[in-house]
Image (cartoon, rainbow, N blue to C red):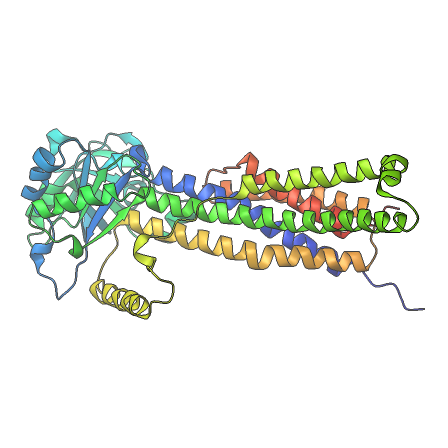
Amino acid sequence: MKPAQSAYPAYLMLALGLLVLIWSTVLGSSLPAKLADLGGLHKTNKITATWLSNSNQPEEGSFSLQDMRQLTQYNLRDYDLAYAMEALTSAAYQKNQSSAQVLGVNDRYDQFHQIDLRSGCFLTFEQENQQVAVIDEDLAQALFQNCNVVGRKIELYGREFRITGVAGADHSLIGTLTDRGYGTVYIPVKILLELEEDCKITSLEVATKDAGTTGRNTAVLETALASIGQDPADYKIIDYNVADLLMEQENLLRNFVAGMVAMVMLFGLLRRKIRGIYHFCRLRLRDKYWSEIIKGDAARLVPGMAEILALVAVMLLLWKLISFTLYIPPENIPDELIDISFWADLIKNGIQTGLQSAGYVAPPGEVQLNILNTIQNWNLFLNIFVGWPLFLLGLYQINLLQERLLKVEVFCSVFMLAALSLGAALLLIIKMTPVMETREVLLVFSSIFLSVVIKVRGHTC
């Protein structure tokens, strides 16, 4: 006799698959919520234009303070605006000195970004001509060794700035990944323009309503840029409504895969049920008529047909839950699938955009968006190409080992609940709010249990 094969590798594979599936579900739902939190009061209801700084582009491609005033008073008077410029300098207090990222901003900037004020207040409209500053906790600790510094002064560019507020440093995963290694100072943009004569305003943010994928938000901003003599092609424009939609779409795609796994399992069960009734009827028709079968074998046929109808109904309901309209940016859709010139132009435009963006420095909000998108892309990839294959392969191995169904169900139940708790705890550790969509969690749990029941069949004792 061959020695009994150990089931530990199969259960380990199953556990790893479950861990990836549950973790990706919790993380995927939390990322769009994090993006909304980073957007401050306006969340993702905004659109941004950032100057594509390039040595081949004229300096006039960036904004002036007069441009911003014109937009505020005329072209975008019905919208909230925030604008900013960025510089790097040294901040000093007595003998202490530290490098600092200086952001010249207007009074609306904190409505577009998550600035967690621990004390004091943010810059106001009345302070646009004053030498005032809001610093973060890291810079406060570096210069003063404490954060109780509202009312004290720091030195920037050889001038003294009065501290009006202290913002909390972002120690979340996103904050850690975007950390440049030095503190941040917010001062009025007008003052920074006076101190940095060679610099100009490079980013503009406009509060918008969610216009979906109609392109209305982009059209409004492009029209406004043209009205002040700017070429929209010289700016990187991001509609955060669409960015949020694309991030949510990856969650819908993940749910679609989970639902399709369940549907494949249900279809296999449906096929077996239909085949069973077919063989039963074929056997009876050898010596009976249809009327005799219907009358004499109704006790077996009716439950079987009811099971088939129930399976079909569940599959239709499941399809309704997971189906969604896939959004692809219009500029990436050809009129004809086989259109060589379109694909050549698309590649050419991509290369030109890359060359145009050489030397481009993304503002803090865009850096955060890029990191969240990268995490979401990897999250979807691991879910589809690691989580489900590991889980299904583990089930296959367990089925070969003829493990008891109850044992596998208990293992999956306990491990899924543990993975769910662990996922929520990890999100809290990296300073992200856990968001658990009930429908998504139930969909994944249902797909997993359905796969277990159908794959590990016939071993109930």
